[in-house]
Length: 453
Image: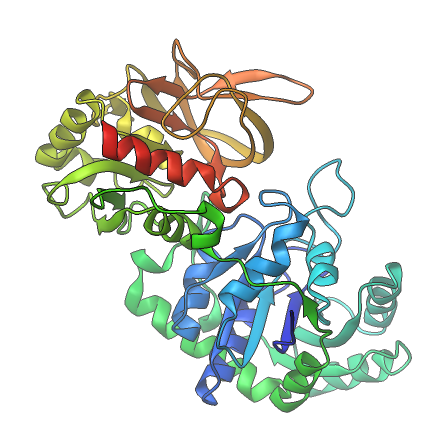
């Protein structure tokens, strides 16, 4: 089977060049033309896909060659792009920056090659003129398998500045497909872990996406960009399918799996809920900031990542729900928690009472912990059998003390091997964000435990 969904990868020489503005604005501008746009993000980032979803009306999907393996990039892309007219993939960091010490693995360039997609290079031109040609030529010629099909010049100061940049780029042989002036209202606020998620600023986020769309529609040649997208090569193979991934649903009545959502818990890959549903669960989303009870009939609980440190006071004030979570965990029901979920299960966070499921305290720090991790399950848990290998990602400015329980969740491999996380009764809690599409058996195992606990 082959598929030829028109597609573009929006990349840049470095972070901060304007990838998110251009990618999100391009998604929204294409959608405004009546196209069904499939939004994607290279890497483990959870926040940008929220803006992508707002721009397109479709779920933002991640394409991570480290977490899921290169072999799943194409199938996961095709899964997200089903029924779409065009796809826009936002890159990560600089075009050729990948997993540390792993060469091109998980870089934007790597994913572009796996998708056989042309690249649009977004260049911050605010402090250069003729030098832009050397920069673009270097990126376009570095890897002959990466096709840089055009440039969008960002933060251009004036008509004269634009004229100088265009003259220089004529020598580079890469067409200019857009020129964007400096427009402050397109900026989106950031804090300690990046952009503020859409769920926390709905009205302002809508305005920001509309501004991005207007700027891109005015400054970019949408017809030329759509034409470039149509030049992408065909992809062989079938789209990823959650039902095929889990083989068969767990027999019996569908157990209710409650999944934390709302502004405090926005970090979740869509494929997790799809796998749980395919494995036979009834997935119900609830908001720990607002709901005082778990969904009726909850047999298992999944608490992903997010910003509990920002909402610690509100989460702590919802004592009825904290009690319900503690009682569910004490009953032995399956509970899977990642990063923010780990903090929520602790005794306290920055001195404020949390659920008290784990005998550990959590607090904010100035130190950023960031990076991919190669992990192995230390023992059996509701998610994985001992010895199961998964790749994960850490991204936080908090610390949990102690960092692991009597039965850790993971052994982290690498130059500094360590154990981290907690496995207690039916609880699996860890800092590691994992992508279950890489090991769909964890979803089926979790649903099985929900049926039998």
